Amino acid sequence: MDLLALLLENKLFENSLFENKIENNLCFPPTIKSSWLAEGVLQLLPRSQELPLPQELQQSQQSSSQEKTVDTLIISAGIHGNETAPVEILIQLLSQLAQGHLPLKHNLLLIFGNLPAMREGRRYIDNDLNRMFGGRYQNFPLGNESKRAMELESVIRQFFNEPAVMASTRHRHLDLHTAIRGSCHEQFALLPYQPREYAADFLQWLEDSDIDALVFHNKVGGTFSNFTSEYFNADSCTLEIGKVLPFGQNELARFSNITAALQDLIAGLFSIKREKPTLERYRVVDAIIKKHDSFQLNIPEDTKNFTELPEGFEIARQQNQSWKITSPANFILFPNAHVAIGLRAGLLLAKVT
Ligand SMILES: [Zn+2]
Image (cartoon, rainbow, N blue to C red; front, side, top):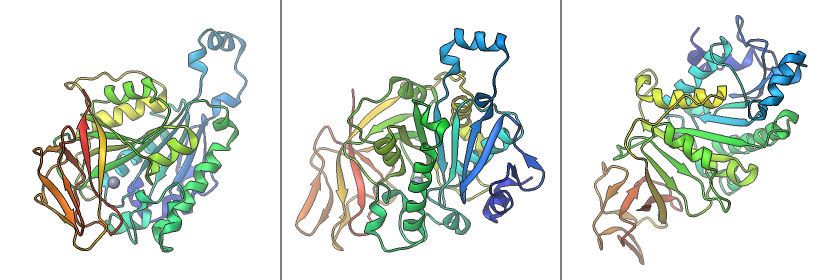
């Protein structure tokens, strides 16, 4: 069954809303309690925690308290509609869960972010959804994305009010994306700014997942991962897993490390181990904000993410303002002169040694 086609045709959800099945003949195993919280938002709870265990099993579970802990996990994809590989990965995980090939250990929320934009193969319809969270959608005209941001925030609140989720102490959120341009580090995670410490086991999971770099934000922002970190104390990140390609053109084998790492999280396993060289770490030092029509970026359009620029180089200018490279913030991330006025046209990073 082509779950992706059903998803895009809106049939995956219509027929299954509030029923424990997808379409007609694909059901979740009895160990999983499923419910659709909104279009493209599927809540899956492990059912075993509700059933009384036989006495021998109760004893063996008590002897290993770590085994018993149920955490909460959110995995989202397609917040940008043209970023297809994450959506295909999510479909793959959904299919494995439904077929009973992937056991569900933790409370799980799967989110297909921007379905109208996915159907049209566009990043967004009206405005960038990943700038609108934390109530920032109110600053945008009412449109496809501002409505969806409002809906996703309300759905996330509903999910965290679920008794099983309230009983869990650890929350994690992986928001999967692909980048528009090439990158010196193909796969990297952006960690939202948070005043509390980053959880060591979360950073360890990112390292084990074989991604190439971590970027630590220096300020709060309107991203989905910032929202779950700031409001629900989740260990969150935006995970950039490769380059944007249309549906069907992704080589899913290129993302096997990420898929395996997500399967581990869902099933509560620790099977992955880092094979790549050391994970590089960067911190955001400055954001280049486009505030005027005169804005220009002084680097080629195809400049890769994490390109190192020389000290003193004027990377951007606009009326009454200029940005020059000052060490150690020599690295450029997400340069894009074509963003709307008021939005970020690039980030300047320093390497963390
Ligand atoms: Zn994206």
